[in-house]
Length: 298
Image (cartoon, rainbow, N blue to C red; front, side, top):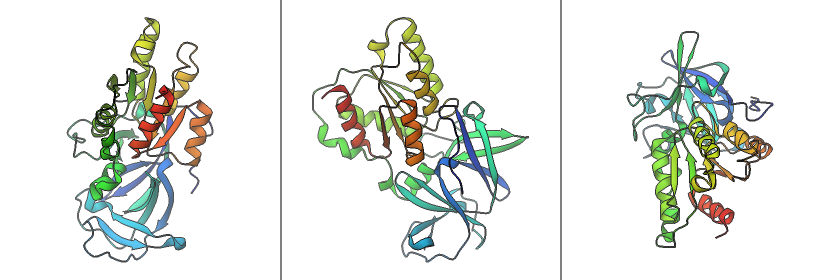
């Protein structure tokens, strides 16, 4: 499957792979999809998480198979359908689904943030909703699903615990991250490392509006000497935000650090072409702090 989703970077578009479970439509960013294969038998793993079907080895690579029905509390999975093999956060996983419907190119402005009934702070596993031809496609938070199965795959705040008590860093930072849980963990980690002057927003659009406001009133250096952004966010993604920053004559010198689960070779090239100063893969919060230290000269 070709996952080179966009010829041009920073267009604020994404491609969503639509799949179904019980005839309901769900989606995943194509940037996370490695390939799609027909279901094949797996080997169960004793004492594993209830959502783990087992393991199998396509092309001599061991992959963990996840029962997505179990994750969504939809009942038992049939021994048929498809595996969507994904790669993000440095992990390859296979998610078992009923059917794969196709790929849709949409703008991030078409992705509506889920309300709290669908995505509570700690329990929600939806990152957005898309309405296409009277059909709703729920974009699932696959990082949250994997972290729920194995907490060790998530953001590890203990990586920066040894930095507690070091001198405070007087550098204002703007953080754009749509996951409320991840925002809290990132803020907690950065504050532990001494970065306390943080402004946090839920998407690139809000970040850009703030930057424009600070630019226009001459307070950029007081408000944001560095920007940290996720890539996948409703309304405006991190690549579009990076492009806007790096093409604005009065803001372009502001360092931009992309901190995302989808930093693969293709996405790294896109970030470089847009002028990102650094790109780091979640959940490596320790490396994020090291890069911030390097940029601010600590």
